Length: 190
Image: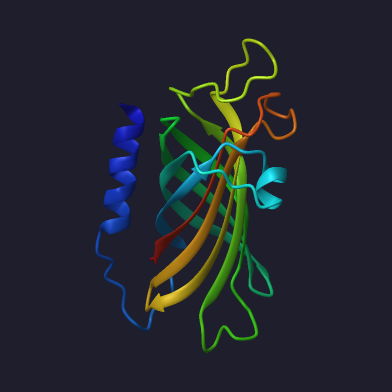
């Protein structure tokens, strides 16, 4: 119930019209709605070309640049809600920090961004997908989110997004990789 309300609030924030003068600098916020196929294969298997689709995932992420480090690099925070469906169905909420890169040699002609975030994720109704240690609880795990975006229209970008949730090599738990999604989406900057 809490995740449904949080998702509805984030969606309303992302869809709300933004009235910003063309002369003003772009704000530090963005919202991304994305979706794609998901797999419970290990990352090493996926990198080897074995992305066995056993469901899908939809996510909504809200990002905020915290401060600029220089050379087009910003330190930023991200909060997101996701919903896995298919063979394994459960929702997650996550909050993390990361870096965004937005100054590439071609950025004057084609707006391009790259970002990576990581932090804790929580799934109140998590299902045990792979459980090498008996009675392991997969509710609290780590998430990693990687995003590459290209400007589509004014404050809207099309993005390729990867979302991964796991025990982070035992940092959170010994639970195996429980979800990876590779998909596309739209980001609205405001």
